[in-house]
Image (cartoon, rainbow, N blue to C red; front, side, top):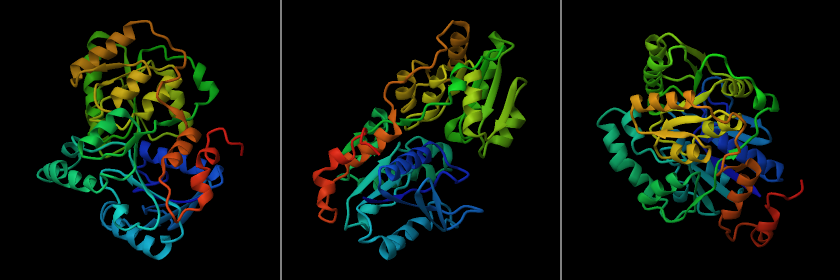
Length: 377
């Protein structure tokens, strides 16, 4: 099968996050199954126009007017010149703004992949009046085009949000998961009570709420420390405002991330909303519970991992952390409910893909057997 994925960013992009991890893991498993995968995405400083990673061909085109500017038109041009007739399935990844593949891909099935909707995020990432336009005009208008398109999302919370926008063919295929290195599953905890924040330092992730909650926490547990892992536009401001006991690690590799999560006593998350919250699952896998706001996405992942949800208040978040740190809790790795192996995710997406006359008959007729998770390689 020849698969084309449209995504605003790829794993090499400096602003890549959980959505890009999902896309890449699924794509590389499709390659392992014998499919040919092309990822169309944006350029970034220092990037090449043509690349390959884990067998996935990467085609990058200009994003010089911003990732949401020229890239949409570049995607249309690419499909008209190189795509038409050369692919059996197109994946349209919706990251706030979709590529609107259903308007220009008419020769092969299109599946939309939406981790979450923006909704409240507009107020954190865009100034007024753009935020109001985005929330009440642009996003509903963009998503209206996907009303009858097969759409995949990663949690029940995101499914309900998409359905509120009128989408009628939404299916949940949970996040995938890769087991951490065995050494980190038995790592010793820090002697001092340690809270860790892992994520992009941007307004919609609310790292400043995590730091404010940490200040409340220190009033009851004075020797507690906070580790901040990640980078983003708020980093300089957060470093200036941070109190004693806060350490910034910046961007770290996967091995270091799991090491730090395994040494910490709990993970804190304060996002406006998430599609799922893969970091919650990763922390649980090394026995580290999560305390987070009770919002869409985190509501799903935290409950699946046995963590604690609080109301949206830095005081409540701080109290929730204090309760966890004061209470003995199980530190053994947790196998969260609601997640699959990446191979199972990759197979499930293809089983949902609609068949078309342009796809070879054996793909449609034998799809369930061809793409089963336990198919020998």
